[in-house]
Image (tube, rainbow, N blue to C red; front, side, top):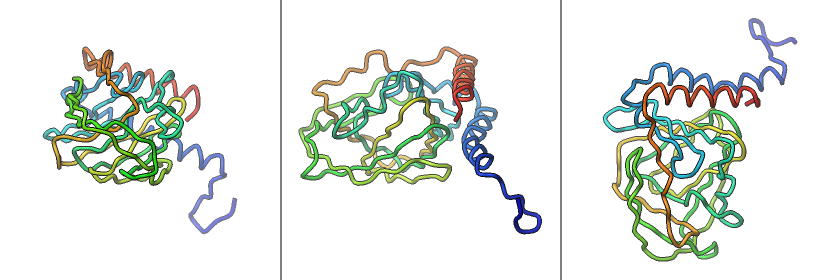
Length: 226
């Protein structure tokens, strides 16, 4: 295919394959340089069943994490109007940057409004990486959806006070880079009247177990295609 001198113009299929594997290559590199102390802050069933949090970097408590959504997850139910919100709509302690690794990952932003469904408001004190959080009920609020977009290979910034959630179907993964904490307690909005964290935030027993877990996921998405 012709193009400017010295430039190889890729066929659409080849270009798509390179784009689709860019995130996985970055993930593999982060795993190669991750140290044991960071990896041991990883957990299975983080916030929801069949979603893993893999901590690949820890600089004085500021984490870089990769979330892995395994087959059987229910993040497709993270819809305000027609889902049951297994992960409630929430803000964060810190500004974030999010980036897709594999699969289709939708990022949705919300605001307290007047037209959307009435959700239960909880204050949410994080249990750090492997312990259940502490929550307190605070009342009811209407929540409106503001916008949604697919995460891609470019970082999507998120202000710490912005309410958001993630929706995806099938195996998927995304990268989250944290920054310095801005608040210690966050806000959570759910359709559930009671919150149950049984079976969530399961720690890994060893660094090898974390690495084997990641290898299984990479093999899974390789066999299915990115």
